[in-house]
Image 1 (cartoon, rainbow, N blue to C red):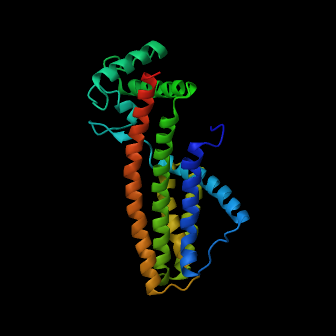
Image 2 (image 1 turned 120 degrees about the horizontal axis):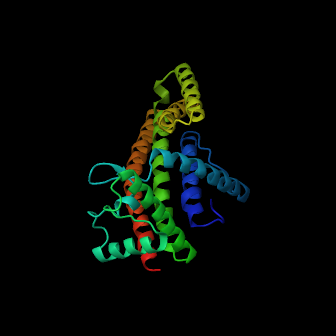
Length: 272
């Protein structure tokens, strides 16, 4: 999918993966005082693990937060599709007319509302047209800004999931002092089994909702092995709410960058 280590690898995989590993380790550092060694070998291992974890986070984020927005009718559609609607005014009439004509001439695809009365057919044609425009821009080596927008929206998308999982994970740590270990053990095994079954059945909807629950009980299970006083309980709870706030902000930024990415691809294509 990616021919070389580039902007997308760093923003789409490495940074979210490192953030995930760091937040998973944070409660251990706060409660036990043990932090990862600051050696070159350990840093290299962390980079490799972060990159691999980033791929998993990206796959989960794509299923949990698909890059679709609600149009004026309340239906979920891709920004690249909505931008081409006759009633959408993100582009000037002149630019939209030029874009429609260039796509029709170069690719032979009619993306207008009038030429596609069926919404499903119109969506498929516009999706094909967008990817063709993106390929044309990349071939001309004019896609640097568009790639940055894509990297940023994927970064925000993945960080939303990372912060959400880390929030429930820290919440589990905070509540560990109030929950019996036996209850946590049994519940953790049940949720883990359900997550594996959902993954085997490829039911992404169930898998997404089971994973945060799994992280909550995982945090509680790990927290029972450490002495957590009321002061540390307050710290962990504060981190939990902070992460939830960051997740909301990242989700808002993700939506903004998703729109900007689609707009940039179309504008760059018109400028070829």
